[in-house]
Image (tube, rainbow, N blue to C red; front, side, top):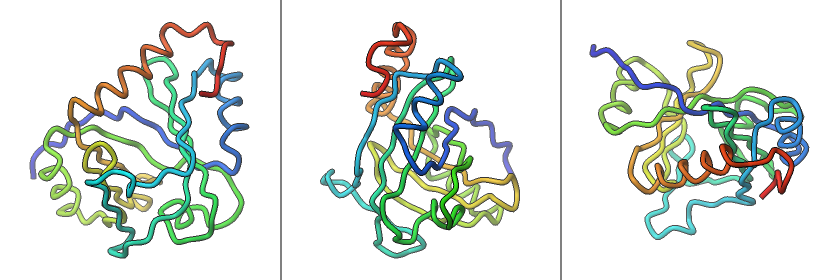
Amino acid sequence: MRVFNRPIFQYAYYVQDIDTACMKWVNLFGAGPFFRVPHHTVHNDPRGHFSYRGETVESDVSYAFAYCGPVQIQLIQQHDDKPSIYKEMYPGKQDGFHHVGILSAEFERDRDDFKAQGLDLAVEMWAVADVVYFNAVKQIGCFVEIHGDNEDIRNVFKRWKEAHDTWDGVTDPLR
């Protein structure tokens, strides 16, 4: 087995109220500004595809992204009761840490390495690049997202990071 050396770029949390959670991060840590993606669906992109546990079922989910220093924070709120990696980990009405994210320039190889290690592939989708989620709760207590690394996604992340680095910490914390 090869040595897997991909740094974690993102820490993601499942929350019941995304705007309230964003403001907690702003007030506690100076994270922000948060860029919200309400009621996200991958099917808006002509390349879009989504499967959860091999089924084409996509829940109604909103996201918020921000930087806290060098680290990207993602907050996730699910608005329905459809099966998902979020409800799989948090079936009740609680908030909690959900996954770490890594960027991969060798997406297929990294995905196959995780499979070979016996991790459970839970989601495959397109979100500006190929993305998979593995259930690694038994191994490390959370899911792992492998996100394809390409120029488009790097530009999105760069814009969010620049917004954080130049933000006054007060103006328009939720965007």
